[in-house]
Amino acid sequence: MPGETGNIPAGAQPPSEQIDNEGPAHSPDCTRCVQARPALEKIRHVVLAQRDRFSDQTLHPYVAGKISLHRSSCSTVEDLALPPPSGEGTDPAADQFERELLGFAHAQVLSSYRPNLSVMTAQEAAGWVRARTGPRGGARFRLCKLCAPRLPVDGA
Image (cartoon, rainbow, N blue to C red):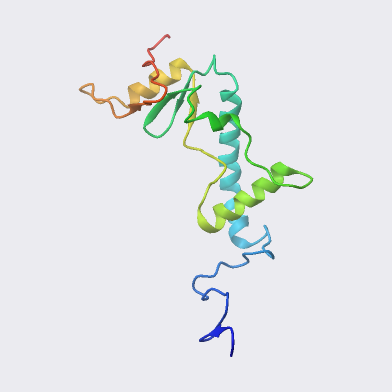
């Protein structure tokens, strides 16, 4: 038949690669989305709390990634100040969450949330540095080369 290759219609994925309930007819009530929703809500809560902390950069002058320490004003982490991108609709935040849920549940992708960044006070940053300094004084972290933050000290 024209438009078919073997038993698979043109434009369709083989059944082993096809994601259940994906595409324009996808429902956020699909099994994967329902199971992933609590974990994504927890991540979203943490990210929104970090964004709240980020809004006061005098109280929270440091931002740490997995291995790098930045100033809050660093261009590398400035997207923390931005709300997640939203789409059209009556409730853009809810629409964004549902889109994020689809990617998180079906492909383990987080496009709008960066849960690996921690906004910290000077004391918290000093503790972060201490936890990543080896017994002989070796650093298991990096200071950002763009913003070159001062190494935080206890009581600073």
